[in-house]
Length: 281
Image (cartoon, rainbow, N blue to C red):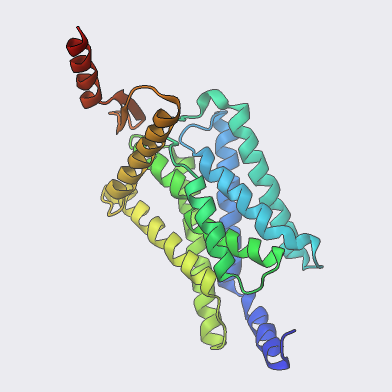
């Protein structure tokens, strides 16, 4: 039960939450989703888009907006929350509808590596150990990395100049920047205001977005080489675990000239097999 002082601060923060930065962020977010769906419908294709990112956003919306079932809210919030949930489901279904256009070889990120750590982190960082609050915190952390699969896809899809795809990425990134300005505005107006979870997640998301913009428009990126190297290593580790469990040949992963993730036999392993065969003869 919050004290009268805490309740007063919370009420003041809520009042300042309704500002131009907040509205700007919400409508940039909505615009990004509209552009995404319009691009898919116009092209009858999901090429250039990451299914993994859309799945992460679906998880984010479904876990964050469970509060719709908990208490009454302003119509503005209800409309936006329901819209985000249903449009994310539509985006996921589009990948089934246009499955033959999904470039799976470029959509390579293993999203469980994000989901599990974010859930564990939310257990430590949540302000209240209730289901709604824990899932809300989880969704905040997960949103920080939700665009990473799309960024990795774009890093592999260098030749793609599709305006709709680029517009979607820029609008979603811009929405988070507006929300960051919203947090700064509230902190300025209400010094007692604190939302560490959102701030940490927002900073991570903005850093990744700015680096992506630098890559897209200036062909320079501080993170691209590192991110792709990690992605390749993750696939090699998964492959090695499966090989140990089920057998098979050793493989390594590499990025092909077209940007796709390619598997090939490990040269050392092949040489070893040839040597063993010769020795047995």
